[in-house]
Amino acid sequence: MNLATPYLGLQLANPIVVGASPFCDNAAVARQLQDAGASALVMHSLFEEQIEAEQHALARHVEFSAESSAEATSYFPDYAEYQLSPDNYARQLGRLKADLTIPVIASLNGSRPGGWTEHARRLESAGADALELNLYQLATDRLLGGQEIEERMRETVAAVVRSVRIPVAVKLSPFHAAPANFVARLEGAGAAGVVLFNRFYQPDFNLEELEVQPTLKLSDSSELLLRLRWLAIISPQTRGSLAASGGIHAVEDVIKALLAGAHCTQVVSVVLRHGPRVISSLLGGLRRWMEERGYEDVGQLRGALNLSRCPDPAAHERANYIRILQSWRV
Ligand SMILES: Cc1cc2nc3c(=O)[nH]c(=O)nc-3n(C[C@H](O)[C@H](O)[C@H](O)COP(=O)(O)O)c2cc1C
Picture 1 (cartoon, protein in one colour):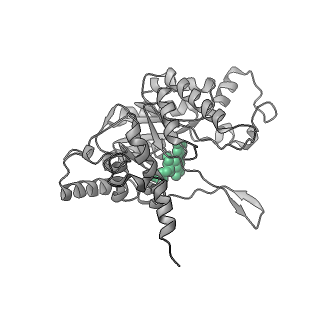
Picture 2: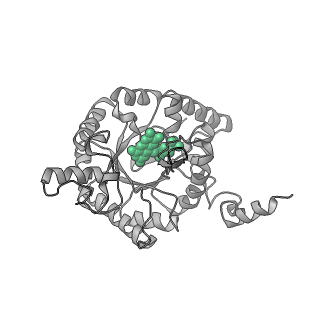
Picture 3: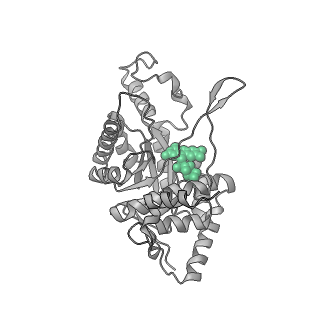
């Protein structure tokens, strides 16, 4: 049985990739993930703010204070609070490449064009097989419209793509007015694929302290549905690679994401909950499911229920919304 799948021009041994997370900060854990069957690892992100802070510190041009920066930098973690400095990140990447046989994907996180995008070249030199660029952004400025924000994102992707020869995937939020069109524009800018989707960590309110409290809740399978819909819609309209990220917890989730059109699935929460060995049980489940139904190649699943191939395309679209609302009786 063939579980191999193409992703960003790489040939992955199977469709289960460990998504961006702190796992790779520990080389022994990264090794366990490979041993459990992960077909590639994505490192945690280096942030635009972090790289710029280092560039400023090195150039000694800018006094790094909240007052001197365009952003209220005092809200950002201190320089030393980031998990790995850009230097240590490159060193860790080199170590992982020396230790592992599976591809290692480095991650950058930022959405505005700037000198920081050239850092991509350093990650390529350190051995990254591909880059994932996370465009995480919250549009909070009433003077800044969606078109302007997306154009900045497109320029950022183009700048990163120009800096390197390795493939660049873009990790997107679900909150774009026209995701299929935006993905097409990112491909025009040179993106080799997209990762659907980022999760937003919504802060909660603490009523005792009257404070806004950061929270990090791990996902569950219900989050996959949003991914399935957009994978199914985008998959017939792109030749780029698609990764599902968010809500992959069971083998059924992996299968659904493939049927929707994903080339691979990224797992984080499920591995944080159950440890690396969960990957081998997901792979075992995938093999069993395919065997029982006579599939020989994971490529046969890919996109079989996407918008252009599923028996009822309306189920992915507005008609589904109308049907669902009409079906509720009291
Ligand atoms: C502890 C933790 C750290 C993460 N760090 C990053 C990161 O550095 N960069 C990034 O793009 N995503 C990061 N993510 C998001 C994951 O890559 C993934 O998109 C998200 O958790 C959804 O997948 P899941 O449902 O399998 O958890 C992180 C998630 C967790 C839980």
